[in-house]
Image (cartoon, rainbow, N blue to C red; front, side, top):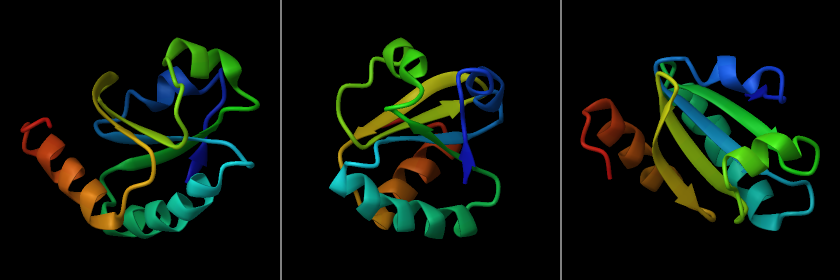
Length: 106
């Protein structure tokens, strides 16, 4: 998992398919989501998984209108194509990724 900053965020989301985890250290569901994302990162080697600490990188958080934690934002070649608010399991995220790959955005 790559940690994004204000300086690296825009370049990282240019990857063909990106899942961005907006999290905070104090957020319980964020801690529950991290092992899920680590497992998915092993399964989807063509997806770039990155994290943004919402307490540190507030400029990115504001520009992305993040108000719920955790929030997963999916980008395809720099464009937001999907968003999941709150904790979800492996299967839910896998289905979203597969739908995005097939261009069947949810």
